[in-house]
Length: 550
Image (cartoon, rainbow, N blue to C red; front, side, top):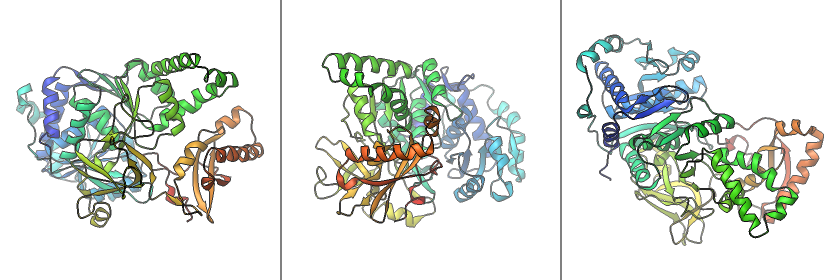
């Protein structure tokens, strides 16, 4: 296990970046590292007075915000366990997760609490507003007293906070830091237990390999309650002394682009959906024009055009970024190939909540097309097959990043971590001789074709989703044939005045075009219109199990 500690990284950054701005909501005045230290000490005092001990659980439910980040930092540096829950869950599910986690104190957005039935979370001793840190409710006299007298006691104990005061818990790396509830596309939510060591390993790797330095601006727009956004848009930049600007609402592409232009971030983290939308909506219509197709195959001219497209795209993202790191889901191969061709500085990483989250990464100038980087230095990654370089098998791994297990679910833990400590990811792939990991699909979504060949529906969906009048798709197996469920792009249909009758004809032609691009054994027999958007997890992954008949 590594010697570096999460709390050590936080302490060091606060001391070294004392007067730098650390966290701010977009368009608002933020907090310096000094001010955050003061808030941390105040919350620590409240925890102590309220009878909270190391290892106790603290629930955190709310939209992304500077206050959200402060509660997270205060909890883990106290030695308590933070339970960040995505605010997208329905009220009943929120209550179930809060109860399942055994949270003693709950920090929550006011509006979210209004939708909750407080009687359904009886074990929570106190509920505190993330909006203004006021006490919303408490049935526990000790907790109520602790919060009522907090300001007065804190002012006496800390008339002035100095750098040398920055010393938090000595809790060790093997102890639990976070319980992260993942929606999961194949079943119900599970509480992933992430250790201090896993978070420290993620931060150490990022500091040594990702292009940031103290003072760099970062835009945070991914869900912070999910490990990807939390680790690389918040914890890693914070421990490096960066200024993190948080977009407090799920941003539209217009707001996101505007924020990038204003803040000019040095490192951008993204999920494929954002990049693929730019490709499909802005680039594909341009490069698909007959004249452009001709120009793009003429040597010299095509390079000039690629350079111009790359420059325009770079400016779209603020113009100052060193790299865009894409992760969280599979990247559309067609879009990836085009962005590689024009020279956009991007990299595709691989991770899972169960690894806090990073498994593999390579910088934009060393990554291979179609690969998801190389294993991080705190993990041993291999393929469960006779020949990992050529023979497809499950990606398995072990090391510091791997979770402690699923909270109160020993059965599920044993199903994913075997007796030798190998974690079975459920992803299938190969690893080349340089260590590059190529993910081919998920074992749970793989369809066995009539010829006995493995079919990965997401490969077909990636092609379908680039087609006109299709917002998203889902390929399933019915009676041993592949069927494409299509959620139409009603916005595009309205723009082009396309009726539903016309759409049926267009989709049949589209299906034939898709089949020409894939092997015969992967051919889709028919398209069927699915009139509503597919139900998704809070991470925006389609819940496949709801639509699979076989």
